Length: 118
Image (cartoon, rainbow, N blue to C red; front, top):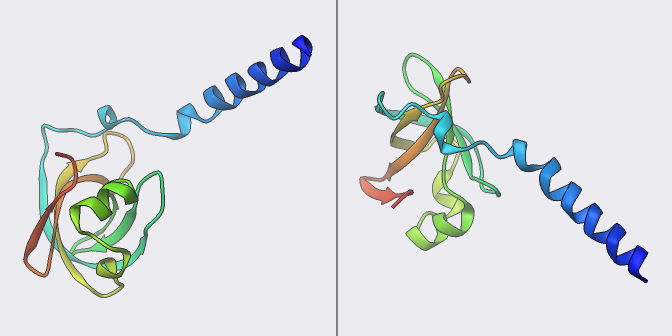
């Protein structure tokens, strides 16, 4: 029985640390370079660990990392609000290494502001 407990503990410890690098930290985004633009949603994923949306403005398409779905729901942002073709304004910070990725601090949908981080 002790061997089983030890083996299960080792397995959970391994699994917990094996997936940790997959979750990027907010330190990877450059808070000295705020972005503020309006674009059109090309697609969106309303799933954990973070909802995302591909948003195209006139010059480029950004992968916008939003908040976890639980926070999005708490703040009043549903999956239906992130529909393809919808217009949004996004305020956030660019990723330091991943080109065309940004973390959103807030999003404006139909003129309403939704704070995602505070």
